[in-house]
Image: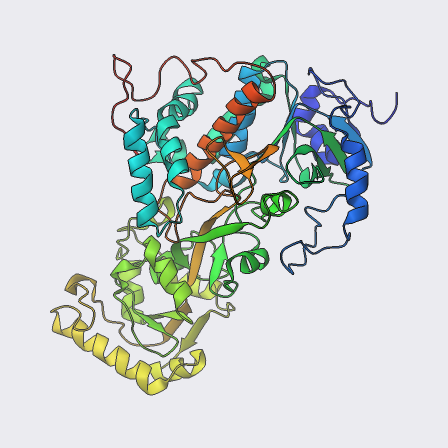
Length: 572
């Protein structure tokens, strides 16, 4: 048996035994399928194309459109060490990739599906998502499209009205598939348990154990590294993956779905795409959101990614744990006192903790939260009031120990301590007279008890700083995610700037442009992933695999449908 025919038991793939060791390097045969095992499909000519592209690029970094170093050489084709075949390859196991792969398996049970995950676990950044609720679809197409254009206008034409409308039309069906057919729980505005890890674990368990998904081969620690693209850039016939041991496997396939997430863990690339240096002003959360999909589509007629927005949400301090009580108290409360690089108070802190406050931090040169012992005691004794996320909600009205947090983060360069306000100003590099005057005015308003004389903040939020020692904590805008980059049409198919599709290439979720503006609207990350994965899977079944999608692919009834079959209202 040759290395191209070596098999690993399916149960080992799915439990990660074979996948985590060497990814696809160990195998090229997958259970079931329409294509011949151990061969590159003759119709794709993938091996030939790969060799031609390997000669045409400079291996060793760089991209076609930016001077980003590209240390992992994403989008650069290498001579493969192994070859394999599949019908469809899905990249990413967040909600978009998971839903795409599972709907493909359900509607095309004879197809061979490879599901790739660069991390050592499934779920990606969906594991950290808090919010999504079952939502009814919009049955009236005219209403859906009117709403799409309204949202596009309100976002200064960053949102794509067609995508917004199509997502609304499919929303009830996608909700039914996830929450009813697959029994994903939810409570109020949150996934069951308050985060997306639970639904991801449930869906992974189904893939691992349910015979309905026996045609999905799941690989962990296996990173998509390059597309196999025709000379004109308008057709994708395969994909290369980087195995855990550094070797490359090339997979010939009929279609690829990129559900690769945003750029919240690769600020270096984000700087090139957005034209703004966010490295010192922002901090990112997520799992492997390195912009791989964005770099991959550069290989095609799609060209450079554009329209990427930084979806700032709550603030924190760089180097803090995301759920640090001190971070929540110092950066997200209406009782905070903020000054900018001039030592001036420049806004009502009552907006802090909202989506707009992240943009406030990005716009300023720097923003400092000033705290004295009285304000610290106020927060320690239940003074946090901001309801905004699961971890901040836990602190509302609750006792907390901030003094130990100051000790914990004493070496953090963005936490500065001084005995006087003037000394604090010197340490953070702002004008001392100006900062002293700013604090004196604020303290006088607190003492008067009549509210903020400068920005109108309510008296109930005017809490005196008190005595020293004083602290200045530099705010960092929390990049919950980025939205945008990859251009797709209403079939979730990747397109060139004129919306001419690239055959065989689809994308889903926040890696795609058109879903959100500069201020994160809420509820978009998960729903766009659901729509893109679902739509791509259904189009691939009918247009690439020669199958038919069942009318009840989402389950017995669309979510929110009345007895007459019409959808009722629901959350957006």
